[in-house]
Amino acid sequence: MSGTKLRLGVNVDHVATVRNARGGRHPDPVRAALLAAEAGADGITAHLREDRRHISDDDIARLMAELRVPLNLEMAATDEMLTIALRHRPHAVCLVPEKRQERTTEGGLDVAGGHNHLAPFVSTLSSAGIRVSMFIEAETRQLDAAKSIGAPVVELHTGAYCEVAPGPERERHLKRLQTAADYATKIGLECHAGHGLGYDTVGPVAAIAALAELNIGHFLVGEAIFIGFEASIRRMREAMDAARA
Image (cartoon, rainbow, N blue to C red; front, side, top):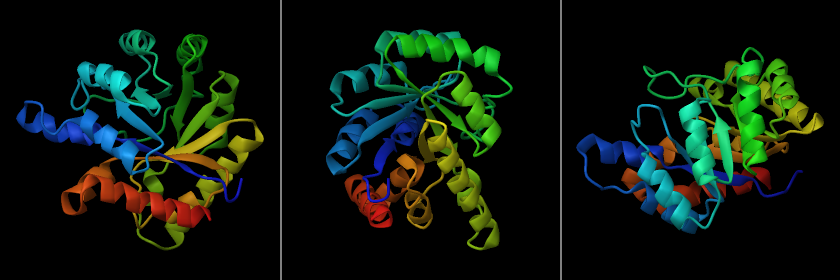
């Protein structure tokens, strides 16, 4: 897979966070999604949380109506979210852990421990023609569990790698991601990665040949304050392409 294009999914959640801080309609996450696609995003990610702290139900409806690139709907494995996903039928659903008190997703989904709960969600979504991904830690046990319940895609949590300073510990986390991505490919899973990636951390992850897609959001929205949204995405696209080349 070395040299193949690595897809970039842009998460627009935190455009909605800024909007919701004041209320009203500005800035519009759907406008951000359309700009992202123009700037080189291969897909858009949006997390519809139980408490609707950023993305709203109306945002999902509008994204489905207006986007010409795939929408990846991040959601918890709940009956409410399943109903919403089946109503809109996005290209993909990524099942993630969700705690009401957390600021952001704090770790991977325990697929191994939640097998019986998660399996029906994977089956129902897959039967509806929706590609299902599991957001997990880079652990063989979780990869095997994702495979066993029929999820065709996994997304490796890169938070631990991004949160530590450059040095031996970061290298250890990077090696763990590399090993997990290689193993995912070996057992027939498509492997993605994301969470916390920025310009200073994306290169070594993008260079992992077994990865097919990176999902990045908060950093790009923050960087847009300084250089503009399209410019922030183009710079990330360039960094990914250079690493993959």
